[in-house]
Image (cartoon, rainbow, N blue to C red; front, side):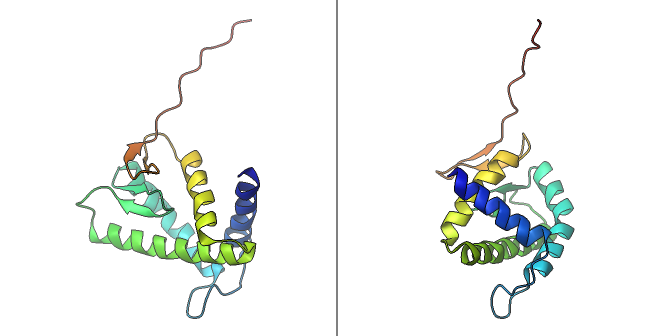
Length: 141
């Protein structure tokens, strides 16, 4: 699992941060285009997450938590999830593995990197807020 996590991390860095220009599939945006769009949308997505309107589901995609999410919010989720799907497919082809394995690795990353208080979905589909880490007691020598 650690190897898969490392492999996925390197691939996502290569795709999203190095600006790979290979086409994902016919008629799809390039990874560079997707990277730009995802980067531009990230601040808006972060706001929706902090407001508790959007969470990360157990399939590697964003999902509305608030049933009264605005049309703009719903549209933003659709764009982000479309981009994620294309990236997952691209990474799977690059790594010669399944999309499911790429998604599983990404879900683990999302859970680990998400800030406390944000909505996540467990393996069984139950929504929860990521807990705050336990307070540590100072070590007195």
